[in-house]
Amino acid sequence: MSLILITGASDGLGRALAEELAADGRHQLLLHGRDTDRLAEVARATGGVALRADFAALDEVKRLAAEVTREHGRLDVLVNNAGVGFHVDGTTRHLSRDRYELRLAVNYLAPVLLTRELLPLLHGSAAGRVVNVASIGQQPIDFDDPQFARDFHEPAAYSRSKLALICHTLDLADELAGSGVTANSVHPAAYMPTSMSRRSGMGFVDTLEKGVSAVRRLVDGVELAGVTGRYFDSGEEARAAAEAYDPAYRRRLRALTHDLLVNF
Image 1 (cartoon, rainbow, N blue to C red):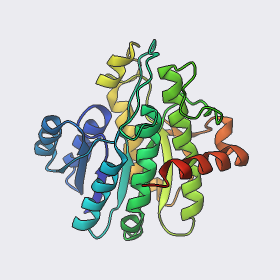
Image 2: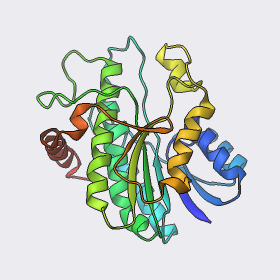
Image 3: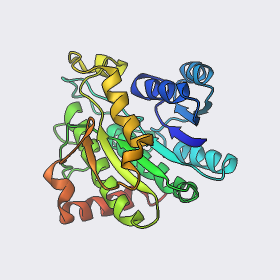
């Protein structure tokens, strides 16, 4: 039985993925969420273990990783799904508890830190997988203003964080080459009927089932065993934004990430 940690499992895509994985009885689920009541509800529905943490605080990310490490000797799949969405007209900039721009913190820094802390458990698996839920919406970070203090716009902040996550996935795949642990990113579907999509102010486009299927394939699809360093658009391998394949851009992003996480 494989052990799978899904972040953002108390709602939307994360919850639907947990419910589908639980239905076939072949997986043990660790379910992260921020809302205690919703998290308890999905844990009851799936038989998973509830793990509460607020990813807007990086010390809580480390605490979550320490709890998983303390209780388990291995981790087969890490699904970094938790995130902060956007409102199409949003221009109010919010900060995380650590004083980082909120979407950069939750959508990018938190999964990077969580993955780093859980790598020893992933190495303990026969074939560990890291699945990063990204987006087709991708924009490069302005390295002169990485905290987006000027001309802030929520959709742009979201897109910056998601491209950063894709870049990190490619770097992680390079780092883990030959280890048996794979790392891939996926845009699951466009504007599924979730609370995040409702808050965006956009209309629904794709079904939740389409998004779950796209992520599920990376979680336990036999045909993707050993496949690493790829970006998928729904169920198909695709090309991310050009910056994801630019060594200079990724080098600058790595340096920025190191600086932001150096105290964690």
